[in-house]
Image 1 (cartoon, rainbow, N blue to C red):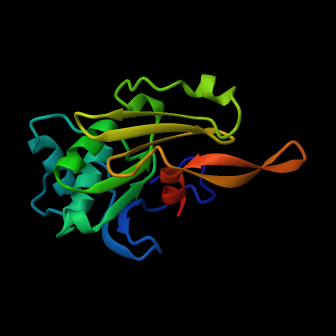
Image 2 (image 1 turned 135 degrees about the vertical axis):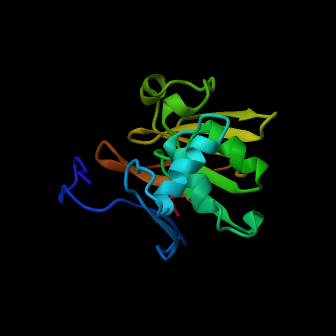
Amino acid sequence: MYMKGKPVKFGYKLWILSFFDGYPFYIIPYQAAQKENGSEDSSERLDKDMKSKKEKKTLSETVVENLLSVVEIPAKHKIYMDNFFTSYDLFVSLRDKHFFTTGTVRENRMAKCPLKSSKILGKMDRGTSDRKFDTKNEIAAVCWNDNPVVSLITNFEDTRCFTKVKRRMKDRKQKVDVPSCVVSYNK
């Protein structure tokens, strides 16, 4: 597969469910769209699962749900993912299945959450944040102004708790507030 922006342009793309130290639990090789030919591998199962669902799911939602299908007791695990996989609809679905999830998120995947935009928040002081909580679906969203604005959604962490971190600002270091969910995501 061709991977734009990588030092080695051609290679294999693997979807991996791993432990926090990188130990893989489950791996699905990405093979693009597959035709029916009698042999079924994991990417063909992904395609079939996508077609069999009544509601239209994105590739990232399908991949996450297939990776997490091997987890026997969801409530014993905390799942962290980057913004390629994260969406509001996925987090609602995972909450219904009792998964604890947190992830960075792209602004267009936050289901029109009324947070301040990254342009407005980026002009404010470093450490400024905005947060909202959807009481119906129990999903929290937070935007935090670091050097770029960081957006996260979570279905189990408290976005009201803050800790202090040191940041370099104009030739000196200063302590700024950071939501605890950002600290646990980075950990």
